[in-house]
Image (cartoon, rainbow, N blue to C red):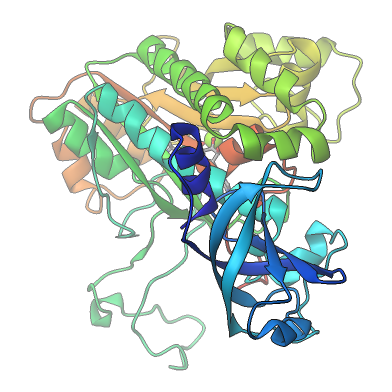
Length: 460
Ligand code: 4AD
Ligand code: MG
């Protein structure tokens, strides 16, 4: 039985005899007539203390029991004599499932995150990473619950696509063509010979597909992996990340901001309420200001300011930024963090960005210069959400596509949606790993995803 279940049963007063516990040994301490074994079964942070009496058959085998070994223990839960825990398991039988050699890389001392990245296949066996990945699982369920409660439909958008939603050209190519085929420098690759008959890539966003379903089912969302070949080695970027993208028909930019704000607050509240044991570890050992940051997010009204105003604040600040700034330039992470962390000290929503720095699908404002974009910036992370109202007018969309150098032929189906029953609609993307960084206080994105993909790293 899992420790988590045992804890739940304890509360109901169920007698806890003849339990079977299976897990991995964290430590073993021998005293004169018995041994204490700390076993963790992965269901929650805390270990179970197993007391093995020397009268047990095979007691002598215990000497071999090393950290990392797997065991099965039969026994009853009894009040603990020691101070460390309320309950312990008095073993009546024990079986060693497998022995880990002394070279098991996770010994009792604290290991650095950098070292643990080199053994990413074992790091979920540590307290910290076990907690991260339990929270990751809980947060996934909370996301589905949030949308389901609001009547959103869950859409599975394709992972392999022929489009580049963000227009940034950061695409991972998908091909079955022989990579060693020699190509003359001036010759183009003949993609008609490729599997799909044209250039294909891994998706950078499910948005364009999701829009088709919002224009059919109303409110929808996708939640899946996305891929970007950005060659940036930052603590906030990975090449493969998960994104949640709601898309709402008959919804404008304000409605979009309202949903984004409610979504973030709901997820933070959910984690505080449902993952307290794991979150407590981060609040104590990873980021002492974590609870304050999270409570600030829940209780603050997210301030909404136009891009122009954000630039004015940044230009007027005394902060020395690494990247120079002017009207028309994109905000860098340092600018975003200054605004939300230092200037406003709470989450903010920046909207109406210049059209020149945003993708083709964003709705052009009446000034002809800006688009109905909105980014939600939060302390410690910077951009957590990027979204917009979509350009629903056929003629304006076609003009913007031409300006952005996109081929009409490739996006004929997207353009078609503006021909048949087009309506105002909006949506956004929330980076799942960045959300996890926010709720755990973990400062490197590589540490909140099971097996991070970054330039030069494809192990595991
Ligand atoms: O702002 P982005 O690029 O927006 C879109 O992709 C839109 N198509 C979403 C939409 O409107 N449906 O990305 C959305 C979010 C960012 O705010 C950030 O949190 C996360 O995705 N993100 C990344 N997370 C980790 N690694 C990367 N390389 C990321 N790039 C974006
Ligand atoms: Mg963005």
